Image (cartoon, rainbow, N blue to C red):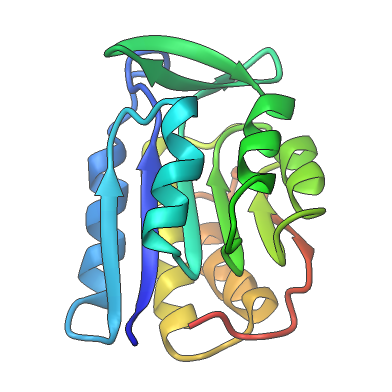
Length: 183
């Protein structure tokens, strides 16, 4: 059975984000491998649990804008800011939790810490993160994960790649069991 990555993006308008380019970086790195990448844009809170249950991903990657302890998802095509607690509650309801959740969301350390209670490993960010930084990080993280490196080592590999072109970007922080590979 092929491993799966599920890339979910929130509403792009609040941060004028280009989440599609981040998903493209992931697809490019994993092309030709035994990992299937599925992408869903402008996902809503009510869709989270059913879509994760349907796809049973090894990795759940969420790219979204954040503000005021909330994540900008979508509802009926409009921007809707969802509280961190509500997002964590939905992920905790998933029947087969992903092994890793990547939160390419600004200021997501609190969310990552909370989510690590119901998911094996979570990566979050202590500060702001722009689209080019998210793309560099994702590209190098997935390249390292595809080489069967642990989550912790893959995160360090991606940090090293990020520090060259983006030295001002605070590195992400991983939570949970990060000593094993996920792919």
